[in-house]
Image (tube, rainbow, N blue to C red; front, side):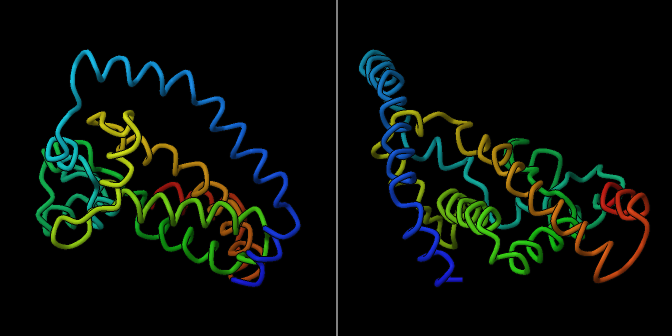
Length: 193
């Protein structure tokens, strides 16, 4: 995986730099506006924002009333107000396993390698680690938009894109190669679980 990443960066370094620079330039007006609002209102304190940072458990939380996973959530102590209702990030155990398996199995494909790295970085940055530590504090200190209460929970929505791509690869691999079943059957299985 490391060799594939180095090869990818070596080949596309100019495009990557242009994309990063273009993104940074595009964000300048928003940063100026955020700084203006922050001067008027004052920043949110980190403990306020920290309450909304997901734990590892939140990525498996569906809600205590979920038809399939509700009893498991209740067993794990996930109630209706878990994380102020902002932490129900679970996509299903079978689906999560299939997404992770696809990221690992198809790691030599540049698209999945790139999205897998983006997913890993976002998860590692937004996650609350044992002891309340989070890399989000570094983002919070330097980007005013990171001080919004629900900023981190929006990353869960963003991560649906790379997870959907990995899931599509995983369903194709599973239904045609690993476990040959009709596409409709696999689609129903993934949708239900």
